[in-house]
Image (cartoon, rainbow, N blue to C red; front, side, top):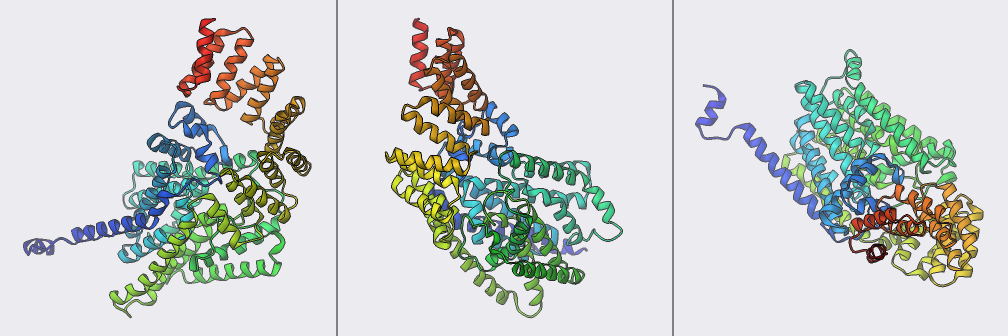
Length: 605
C-alpha cells in the first residue's frame, strides 16, 4: 500500500492539502496586516502635486468612462507619460466612487494588498521556500518606503504595473513547467499591460533571465542563446515602450537636458547607496529630494562606483554557492536603471516610490542570506524573534510616515523640515497653501523659494499669482514680468500674466500674451479659451470660433467652451451650429443654466 493511501487510511490530511491550508492562512494574514497598516490613508486628501493633473482637474478622468476618455488615454502623452491603463484605472475610480479621494486611495491600497499576496505566492512557487517567501512579502508590504506608492493617488501606476509584472512572473513559471503557446501569449499580454501602466517595467525580460538562473536553474552557457531568443518578443516590447516614453517625455518638456552627464552619473551612483541606506534605516523620508548637482564630489562618486563594482564582483563570484545573492543584487541594480536618473526626468534626485520593485531584490538577499547564515543553528521559534524585531519597528515607522501624507501642507512642511534648503519643497508648500486659499502664506513661501533659487521663474510666477489674489496687482505684475525675463518660454506665466492684464482692461496686451503661451504650448486649452473670449469681445468672431474649436478638439468635455462657441455661432448667424454646441454642453453638464437659457432663447428666436 502506498504512503498516500496509508495517510488517507489513518484519516490524516494529504501534504498538498496542508500546504494549501497553510498558504491560505499566510495570505489572509498578509492581506489583513497590509490593509490595517495602511488603512489611515482612506481618510487622506488628494495631494496638490500631480493629483490635480491625474485626477482632480483632469477633465477626461472626471467624466469617468467615456469613449472620448478612452481615445484620449491611448493617444495622450499627458503628464509626460504614456500609460493608458493607469488613466483608465483613474477613470474607473471616478465611475465607481465619484470625485472624492477615499475611493481612489482604496483602489491603490487594494492593489498593494494584492501585490503583497502575489509576491508571496510567486516566490513560494519559484523557490519552494515557504517562510522565507512569507517574510519577503511581509517586508515588502509594510516597509516605510512603500508609503509613497500607496498613499499618493498619482502613483497608482506603481502598484498597477507591479501587479501585472508579478502576474507575468507567475505565468512565466507555468510556461517553464509546461510550455505552450497560450501561456506565452498570456505572458506577453501581462507584460504589455504592465508597460501600459508604467514603463518602468521594461526590465522584466532581464528579471526573467535572472530567475532562469535561480531558482529555475535553466540558465547556463549552453542555454543562454536559446533563452535570449525565447524572450526576444519581450525585449521588443521593452524597446518600443522605451522609445515611446522618451519621445513623450521630451515632447512634454520633462527631460532635463541642462544637467551634464557627469552630474547625472554621480547622482545615480550615490542614489544606489542612498536607497540601500533608506531601506535599512528608513527615516527622514521626503516626497522630493533635491538634486544635489555639483555638491557631489568626484571622490564620493568614485567611491560609490567602486563599492558597487566590489559588491557586484563578490556576488558574481559567490553565484554558485549563494545564487540568491547574485539574483537579488542584480534585480536591485537592474530594475532601478530606468529611474536612476541617467536620462533625467523631473527635478528630483531620487524618490521613495522608485524602490517599489527594486526593493524586492534587496529583501531576497537579506532574507535568504540570513536564513542560510542561521541554517541548522537555531530553531524555527528562535528564528522568529529577529523577524518580529524587524517587522514591528517597520510597521510603526510606516504609520508615522503615513501621517505626513494626510494633505499637501503637512507633506511639504515635512519635506522642508528634513531639508530646509530644498527650494522645490518650499515652492510646493506655497502651492499647497494657495490651494487652501491662504494666499499670504503662499506668497511667503514663494518669496523664500526665490531667496533659495533666484533663477526659478516658476517661483516668481507663483508669487505673482498669490499677490494678485490678495489684491496687490501692481506688485504681481512686476513679478510676472520678472518671471518672463528669466524664462520667456514659460507658457503658464504668459497665461496668468494675460489674465491679470485682462482684469486691468488691457485687452490687446493680454491677447499678445495668450498668443505667446500658444506659440510655446499649442495645446494650451485655457489659453485658447481665454483668447477666444477677448476676440469675441472685439467682434473678431471668426477668430474666436477657431480658438474655441481648437479648445474643444483638445478637450471635448470643456463645457464652457461649448457654451461660448454656441454664442459665437449665434453672432456669426449660424443657429444650427449654435444649437448643437448648446446641446453638447447640456449633455456634459445637464444642470448648466447658461447653456439651457441660451438654447431656450435660440428656440424662441
